[in-house]
Image (cartoon, rainbow over all chains, first blue to last red; front, side):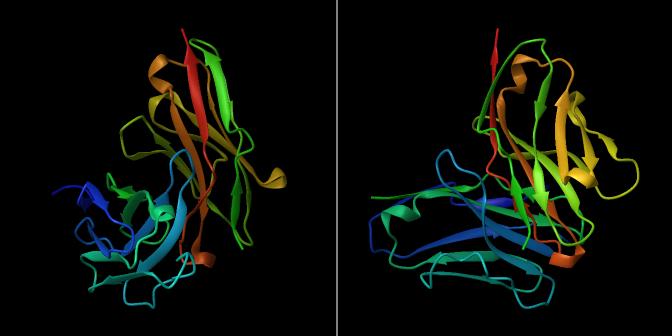
Length: 113
Length: 114
């Protein structure tokens, strides 16, 4: 596809379960970001991958959160033992080079019941 | 550390009136600055960006923004607002000093009155 693709678009899970969110960036984009947006809030940085460099994990809120990226392709964000405060829209974005604008996916809306 | 402040959480403006959204940033080097818009039920869309050169940048949908280094500001303006401009607007800062990691402000929600 032409844009950043995220799946699933919606996910409802029970508290304590693990969830995995997927992001397919635009082909050739070296940079990939995950952000979280709680209802009515701004974008909270989670993690950033740039090429083969070590990812910047400084935004991950706890050790229940982790993310992986294989080369310059798909990324998965995993949340273990979900809590109700994890409910949010998780946005993925990619860019082609340093200083290029971000292209955002439509997000995954996660609801933890 | 880099940061972005959008002082106005909500702004209400009449259709046809002018709009200005404030953005102040903190960054230790030459910043790259962006404005994104998030319309209801839609993803984030880039309005405009500043990297270097002319400090007044033009974007899509009739928006413009002015970079003022002395004030660490990058305010967004539109001369005449349309009802379709009702949305949430986010300012962001990044740059090579931060490996291009973008930091976003908390957003300003714009409501347009008929």
